Image 1 (cartoon, rainbow, N blue to C red):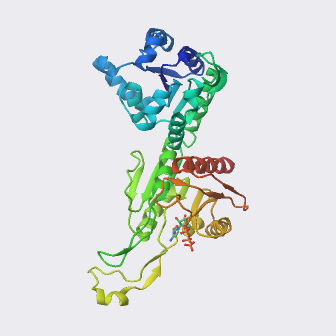
Image 2: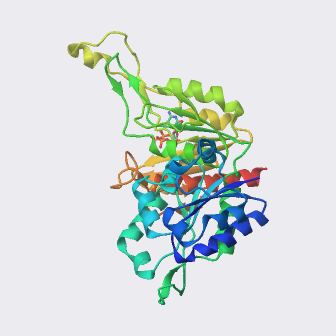
Image 3: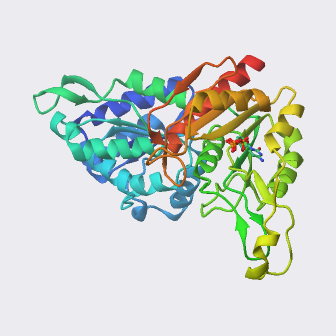
Length: 397
Ligand code: CTP
């Protein structure tokens, strides 16, 4: 049975939360209501407790010890955090990481998907600050049920009316379904650059930050997959539920990838594997007068080509870093490496790709068909890539 954490903030449409609770219960979900203090002035927590069959959480500091412990486990139990209705205030808190009551604190602790149904006056909804907060949250992977045009409590007609409980619950259920969509699948993701050493001090590397691969690993975990993340050196905080294997060189990455390949259903090679290494790596620091004679390069193993040969029914996804004729070059890589899909980006474009939180990619399929995304956060790009991967998995099974 899925557990919905239902955040309720102080919009006039707060009474519709009752309907939302009922509809989720009809779909065999449990609902734990979390109210903001202001919401609890508009409607009695007792009413929502009676409907949900669980004591409503308002202020953690007023709770009994036993409840407090139960609430800690709620973050682990919840399949979805839904905030309906969500005021401009709670959007602002979520967007800026303010955690000064239970609901906003809870948001900073959950790993489950988050869905927000805003409800407010049209001027507040359309205000640039509110819209900026919404964009920011969308960029962080939060989903929204947009409000509707209609009669508002302030006697205006306009944008800002809470979406219907039916629509909110339908969206929520779809998200929960998606969060199980990769259950029972093992995904092997590679990320980051590699380092090819000349001596203990100097190495050859590239500009990859690893962000794209780490977001793919996070999103795969959110969808219920087992994730093995083979990562070159990065400054990123690894997803806690992934099996992390840290490597430095292309050779080490190849070894680790081949070790985990047999159990993987899907492999996503987003690492920027160095194409070259030093022909001779030495254990002592090379003196500068002798640097010239030591700098001889040799190719590294192409990991994907090797995986392509052994792939069987596995889904294989590659990346293509290009500076010209992006889609055609990516298609050539797809064919050469036996891929099911290649994600290509123009690494010369400003403000996206290497080191950035944003990207804009072309997703290229075996027949040569491709789709181009807008410039988006790497979180959003990872969602699109995994949607496409799931379609391929569906066709193969
Ligand atoms: N790749 C790999 N092993 C390598 C080099 C690349 O597995 N030694 C993988 C990358 O992880 C990526 C894909 O191959 O998924 C394409 O990498 P890219 O650097 O764009 O292309 P290359 O094949 O290296 O070709 P080129 O550098 O000539 O564009």
